[in-house]
Length: 434
Image (cartoon, rainbow, N blue to C red; front, side):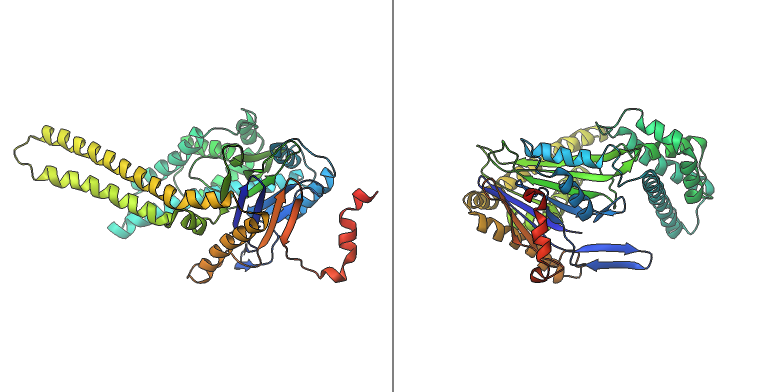
């Protein structure tokens, strides 16, 4: 995993990223703490890019992809930051030779097999739960579990909106072209499980939707996040745009816009964390976000149980009257709980968030960089002194982008010694020296 942050005010935007990445293989996991995730997107203009999630895309390291794009971009500039972001997305899309057909087909195969394995794991989990409770399970119960689980996933994918940049018939064409791979995946993964023809077709449709939709609550461990930040030629203040990117099939990039944030005349400062953000949220809100979730769930449960306890002790009421009174109490409880949440949120904003952003709006460039580094380091420190895996760590790269000075490194790790490699720095702007 990763911890990254962007902090911006009207003068500049500071970007900071850790250097940890988790590599997974058949023999296990290994965490490396020297990976580059923060780059200048242009050698000549004030634009940067950060990567989080998967460190590679379609088998190619993101660092390689970004530097190939940077060379292609050259001295070309765009009027807005959004145009830089969309140009980078277009570079990945539309038949980029770095991602040949056989690589795309392998991505499709792995994604389908991986998702079917996920569905099967949910089925097996439910079956084992019943066996543990009752000691056995009937065949018809297994069939019901299989049916309900497949239909549940099918409904999620069917209800999700298609990616606007992908044609409407894209999913159907994927099924037609790769039907042999899809059917073999169904046979290999679900084996002896009872799959009806209806559910067989539902699994096929899920396969097509895998490459054209992003349903809520369903993630892909191979998804990468990219953050493009800085200034376009006509931008007065900094902004950023982030995307979630899955892969490419049939030369179509599966991606969606994640976060868009910008400074303007009304917004003086913003702090935008990415990936592992719990410590930044704790710093900003004065309380761990997980604590807030647990607290709200517990309060919700209390209000619900309180209504039921009150109704149970009212013997003089009929059942219908009890139901009406219970619903009334639940409605009152929900209104009280909603008001409580709003008041607490308002308190957190006025007491913690607003004062911090107020200070950020006045910070000079060096202080923006120091704050960005400190917040990433805070997440790293928490991981280090807990029983969780140290998925955030290593040197922290920090850069500041401003309209006048461009992309400036504040801290940058190199895998080589600068004094032994003068040719690297001499060649960096070689195009500009011609």
